[in-house]
Length: 157
Image (tube, rainbow, N blue to C red; front, side, top):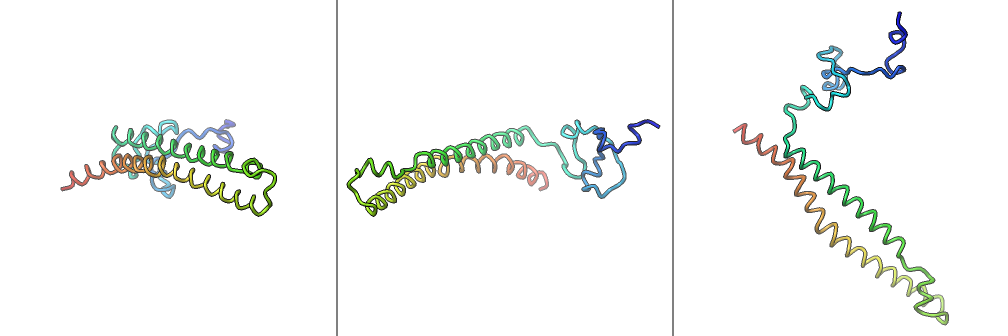
């Protein structure tokens, strides 16, 4: 016998074919309806799971939505890093008040500076992300995926 037939497919790394009916049924169906190389799964229609391939509009809408979502994520990380690294410290308070101030005044000044710093970043975040980018994200996602449903409803009438 051949060595590749004796070893399991997982050990040899030779898994090259997958049953579409098994994938569509979650692996419960043991009948092999059609064997397709794994590299071709993205190009083929999955019977029983997707009735028709996505339209150009859906693909572009999904791509734009993904780009905006990544942009929002990067902005959130940048805001958090900017907020963290520019927070007022005790040294900043000592610079503002001088060495003559007592501990309680320094603590109150530090709390006030940190509150103002937080409020500034929060307002800027709300202006840039929450008020502008999130509505654009929901608009693109709703249009890309809602237009397909509207087409289906129109065809069914």
